[in-house]
Amino acid sequence: MAATGLRLQLVTKEEILPGMPFVIYKNNLSEVETLFKKEISSSLGSKLGKQGIIAKADSLGSLEALLTLLAQEKIPVVRAGIGNINKTDIIRAKANLQINELDAVIVGFNVDIDEEAREIRGNTKIIMEDVVYKLIENIQEFRAKKAKEIEKKRLMGLTSLGKVTLLKQYVFRNTNPAIFGVKVDAGKITSGLNLIDDQNEKIGKIKNIQSEGKSVNEASEGMEVAISIPGINFERRLKDDNVKSLYSDISESQFKNFKKNKDLLTRAELSLLQELAQIKEKTKDGWGS
Image (cartoon, rainbow, N blue to C red; front, side):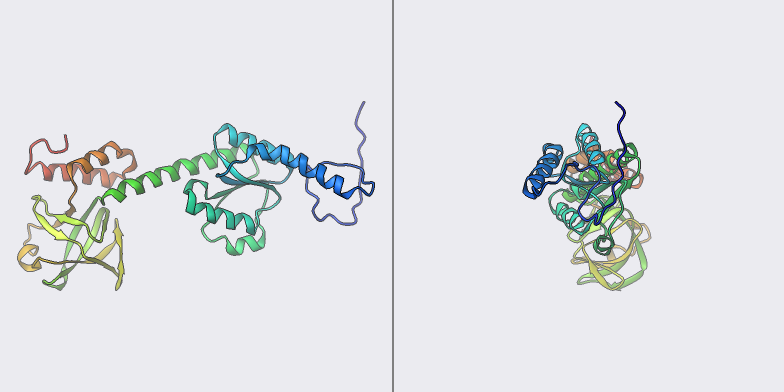
């Protein structure tokens, strides 16, 4: 038999969500609440984990479909709900950032962001789409890119890979410690990093880095900063025209680790890695092979 359409005129629509069960009410509020909670829990509960992203959709049916697709792609979900992305979702996503950066994201299917949530959003990653398959593609792309960033951060945490050009017109102190300007050509430099010249001779350890008059822990590609190095005399050691660049001093095992993870490195960092191998081979044949 064909279904019969039914039009309802509502006195109030608060707390009514698309896709919720529809029953006749006969002064049995607690029974209805139990029924609704059970139906929603059975639909969503089995698809949620202890960790994962946050998912929102415009209806219960849409949310179930979204969770099914996320599960098929092995993308865990810790919290799911119907309706616009709200303040609580933002707070939870920010908390996820402390646990796993891959999970610090909210995906929304056919929803918007509440005004209150917009105010506290900050840099919280939110991915929204009206086409569910496009949403899945976007979250996969985000997670792949973020995973690469996390792995590179771990790799670079072992030691920094960096090359700087000396800005010899900016020498602020000649010695005790020597303070002078440099430009980061590739990778990054950090406080405590040991530097060598292009002959593999040790220069010293960076004590401090200053950018625009403020101390910073690191400087990345393209930045011009001042660095201080104790134990050297700039005029005697670095003023010579033959000394133009300095390099991070890495061990052979660190070099091999970088080489093994070369897919995480930029073109400039890969070029620097080759340059470092050539420098190191000046004092040890077959270094890094």
